[in-house]
Image 1 (cartoon, rainbow, N blue to C red):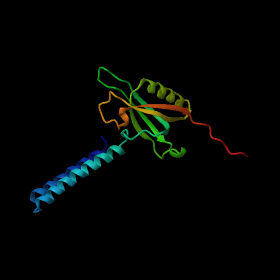
Image 2: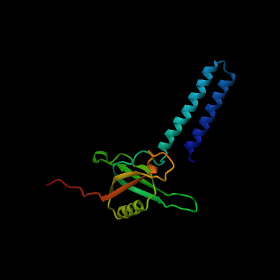
Image 3: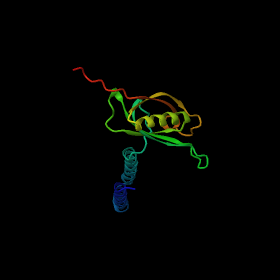
Image 4: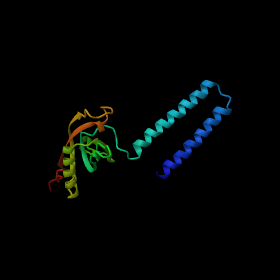
Length: 171
Protein backbone atom coordinates (compact mmCIF):
# COMPACT_ATOMS: atom_id res chain seq x y z
CA UNK A 1 0.00 0.00 0.00
CA UNK A 2 1.46 3.36 -0.90
CA UNK A 3 1.62 6.50 1.21
CA UNK A 4 -1.18 8.26 -0.64
CA UNK A 5 -3.69 5.54 0.20
CA UNK A 6 -2.61 5.57 3.87
CA UNK A 7 -2.99 9.35 4.00
CA UNK A 8 -6.42 9.13 2.37
CA UNK A 9 -7.50 6.49 4.88
CA UNK A 10 -6.55 8.76 7.77
CA UNK A 11 -8.30 11.71 6.12
CA UNK A 12 -11.49 9.69 5.64
CA UNK A 13 -11.35 8.45 9.25
CA UNK A 14 -10.97 12.04 10.45
CA UNK A 15 -13.90 13.22 8.33
CA UNK A 16 -15.99 10.32 9.60
CA UNK A 17 -15.20 11.28 13.19
CA UNK A 18 -16.23 14.89 12.45
CA UNK A 19 -19.46 13.67 10.89
CA UNK A 20 -20.21 11.51 13.93
CA UNK A 21 -19.59 14.47 16.24
CA UNK A 22 -21.92 16.64 14.16
CA UNK A 23 -24.59 13.95 14.25
CA UNK A 24 -24.27 13.25 17.98
CA UNK A 25 -23.93 16.77 19.38
CA UNK A 26 -25.36 18.93 16.65
CA UNK A 27 -28.82 20.42 16.90
CA UNK A 28 -29.66 19.64 13.33
CA UNK A 29 -33.03 18.30 12.23
CA UNK A 30 -33.18 14.55 11.62
CA UNK A 31 -33.59 14.94 7.85
CA UNK A 32 -30.42 17.05 7.74
CA UNK A 33 -28.45 14.42 9.69
CA UNK A 34 -29.72 11.70 7.34
CA UNK A 35 -28.73 13.84 4.37
CA UNK A 36 -25.20 14.26 5.76
CA UNK A 37 -24.83 10.51 6.15
CA UNK A 38 -26.07 9.81 2.61
CA UNK A 39 -23.84 12.48 1.06
CA UNK A 40 -20.76 11.24 2.92
CA UNK A 41 -21.40 7.63 1.87
CA UNK A 42 -21.83 8.86 -1.71
CA UNK A 43 -18.48 10.67 -1.57
CA UNK A 44 -16.74 7.53 -0.30
CA UNK A 45 -18.17 5.53 -3.20
CA UNK A 46 -17.26 8.20 -5.80
CA UNK A 47 -13.70 8.50 -4.49
CA UNK A 48 -13.28 4.71 -4.51
CA UNK A 49 -14.38 4.57 -8.15
CA UNK A 50 -12.00 7.40 -9.03
CA UNK A 51 -9.06 5.74 -7.33
CA UNK A 52 -9.65 2.44 -9.06
CA UNK A 53 -9.35 4.25 -12.39
CA UNK A 54 -6.21 6.14 -11.40
CA UNK A 55 -4.22 3.40 -9.68
CA UNK A 56 -3.49 1.39 -12.80
CA UNK A 57 -6.10 -1.29 -12.23
CA UNK A 58 -7.18 -2.94 -15.47
CA UNK A 59 -10.10 -1.23 -17.13
CA UNK A 60 -13.49 -2.83 -17.60
CA UNK A 61 -14.13 -0.49 -20.52
CA UNK A 62 -14.42 -1.94 -24.01
CA UNK A 63 -11.18 -2.79 -25.75
CA UNK A 64 -10.21 -0.19 -28.40
CA UNK A 65 -10.86 -1.29 -31.99
CA UNK A 66 -7.27 -0.43 -33.01
CA UNK A 67 -4.44 -0.16 -30.52
CA UNK A 68 -0.69 -0.08 -30.16
CA UNK A 69 0.45 -3.04 -28.02
CA UNK A 70 2.97 -2.18 -25.29
CA UNK A 71 3.01 -5.38 -23.25
CA UNK A 72 0.93 -8.25 -21.93
CA UNK A 73 0.93 -10.63 -18.97
CA UNK A 74 -0.76 -14.00 -19.32
CA UNK A 75 -2.11 -15.92 -16.34
CA UNK A 76 -2.91 -19.43 -17.47
CA UNK A 77 -5.87 -21.32 -15.96
CA UNK A 78 -5.08 -23.34 -12.86
CA UNK A 79 -7.61 -26.01 -11.86
CA UNK A 80 -5.90 -26.55 -8.48
CA UNK A 81 -6.53 -22.93 -7.49
CA UNK A 82 -9.82 -22.66 -9.36
CA UNK A 83 -8.49 -19.85 -11.57
CA UNK A 84 -9.99 -19.47 -15.06
CA UNK A 85 -6.97 -17.48 -16.22
CA UNK A 86 -6.72 -13.91 -17.44
CA UNK A 87 -4.73 -11.89 -19.92
CA UNK A 88 -3.63 -8.39 -18.98
CA UNK A 89 -2.86 -6.12 -21.95
CA UNK A 90 -1.28 -2.66 -21.89
CA UNK A 91 -2.24 -0.76 -25.01
CA UNK A 92 -2.70 2.74 -26.41
CA UNK A 93 -5.86 3.49 -28.36
CA UNK A 94 -5.12 4.42 -31.99
CA UNK A 95 -8.16 6.62 -32.51
CA UNK A 96 -7.57 8.53 -35.75
CA UNK A 97 -4.23 6.72 -36.25
CA UNK A 98 -2.74 8.75 -33.38
CA UNK A 99 -1.82 6.90 -30.18
CA UNK A 100 -3.47 8.03 -26.95
CA UNK A 101 -1.31 10.06 -24.57
CA UNK A 102 -1.03 7.26 -22.01
CA UNK A 103 -1.42 3.50 -22.34
CA UNK A 104 -4.29 1.76 -20.58
CA UNK A 105 -4.40 -1.64 -18.86
CA UNK A 106 -7.15 -4.03 -19.95
CA UNK A 107 -8.06 -7.48 -18.67
CA UNK A 108 -9.65 -10.15 -20.85
CA UNK A 109 -10.59 -13.75 -20.20
CA UNK A 110 -8.08 -16.45 -21.01
CA UNK A 111 -8.30 -18.18 -24.37
CA UNK A 112 -5.64 -20.54 -25.77
CA UNK A 113 -5.87 -19.06 -29.28
CA UNK A 114 -5.50 -15.55 -27.89
CA UNK A 115 -2.60 -16.69 -25.70
CA UNK A 116 -0.75 -17.87 -28.80
CA UNK A 117 -1.41 -14.66 -30.73
CA UNK A 118 -0.36 -12.38 -27.88
CA UNK A 119 2.77 -14.45 -27.15
CA UNK A 120 3.79 -14.16 -30.82
CA UNK A 121 3.13 -10.39 -30.78
CA UNK A 122 5.29 -10.07 -27.66
CA UNK A 123 8.13 -11.97 -29.34
CA UNK A 124 7.97 -9.50 -32.22
CA UNK A 125 7.90 -6.57 -29.76
CA UNK A 126 11.12 -7.83 -28.16
CA UNK A 127 12.84 -7.82 -31.54
CA UNK A 128 11.84 -4.19 -32.12
CA UNK A 129 8.77 -4.64 -34.34
CA UNK A 130 5.99 -2.53 -32.87
CA UNK A 131 2.63 -4.29 -33.00
CA UNK A 132 -0.75 -2.88 -33.95
CA UNK A 133 -3.70 -4.86 -32.70
CA UNK A 134 -7.26 -4.90 -34.00
CA UNK A 135 -10.34 -6.41 -32.43
CA UNK A 136 -11.65 -8.99 -34.87
CA UNK A 137 -14.86 -9.78 -33.02
CA UNK A 138 -16.47 -10.30 -29.64
CA UNK A 139 -18.40 -13.26 -28.35
CA UNK A 140 -19.99 -13.54 -24.93
CA UNK A 141 -18.44 -16.30 -22.87
CA UNK A 142 -21.38 -18.54 -21.83
CA UNK A 143 -19.38 -19.87 -18.87
CA UNK A 144 -18.89 -16.37 -17.45
CA UNK A 145 -20.85 -15.73 -14.29
CA UNK A 146 -20.70 -11.96 -14.29
CA UNK A 147 -22.12 -9.11 -16.36
CA UNK A 148 -22.05 -9.78 -20.14
CA UNK A 149 -21.09 -6.13 -20.71
CA UNK A 150 -17.76 -6.52 -18.90
CA UNK A 151 -14.81 -6.99 -21.21
CA UNK A 152 -13.37 -9.68 -18.90
CA UNK A 153 -16.43 -11.84 -19.56
CA UNK A 154 -16.18 -11.71 -23.34
CA UNK A 155 -14.04 -13.76 -25.62
CA UNK A 156 -12.28 -11.41 -27.99
CA UNK A 157 -10.49 -12.21 -31.20
CA UNK A 158 -7.41 -10.03 -31.66
CA UNK A 159 -5.25 -9.75 -34.76
CA UNK A 160 -1.73 -8.29 -34.66
CA UNK A 161 0.31 -6.76 -37.48
CA UNK A 162 3.67 -5.04 -37.61
CA UNK A 163 3.67 -1.25 -37.51
CA UNK A 164 4.45 -0.12 -41.07
CA UNK A 165 7.70 1.70 -41.72
CA UNK A 166 7.23 5.48 -41.79
CA UNK A 167 7.29 6.96 -45.26
CA UNK A 168 9.77 9.77 -45.56
CA UNK A 169 8.99 12.77 -47.73
CA UNK A 170 10.73 12.99 -51.07
CA UNK A 171 13.82 15.16 -51.37
